[in-house]
Image 1 (cartoon, rainbow, N blue to C red):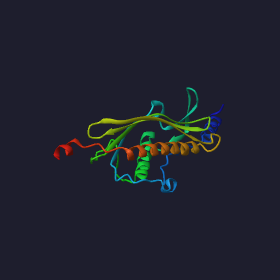
Image 2: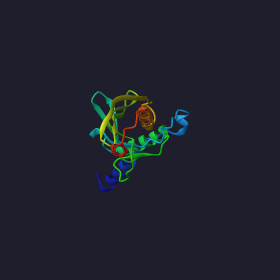
Image 3: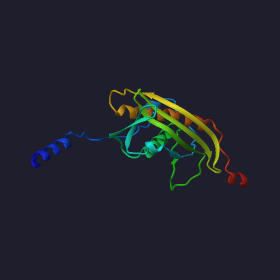
Length: 204
């Protein structure tokens, strides 16, 4: 094969490679929440850390074909890191649901008194070929003053999506699963008594 023909084939191969698409999770909007927002009396909440399985810690979007088989899509990727995007949307959702701007995402150099700290271990966060977006998460509410665990829960959230259509539909469904998780966390924080700061308690 001549050098000219080889160059043409290489150019055709490059031209046929589809461009990558980039995605971010979407936070709740006031319109989607409607009248369900219950003010959290200006709760101060710290979020993080959030851990993910190693197989999700990559720029490509991961889906589960079933059982123990995963697919990694080279042409559909996260716009940033999944961990940062998850924390960003989770914090925005809780700020809206609790009616507070006092949400601090860890790690952070900012310091102010917190009422609660919430950490999470994400066990699954992927679309499936069966048409579900799945979030499985174990989460903890902590006393920020003593690092004492006040509440531990584990939950599974599912949102349907059309696996034969737009790949972005799976990201929208994952955003919906994260919204459902955010609602449960907000409900738990609203009903818990605030821990007593031992420094302030001794000063009385």
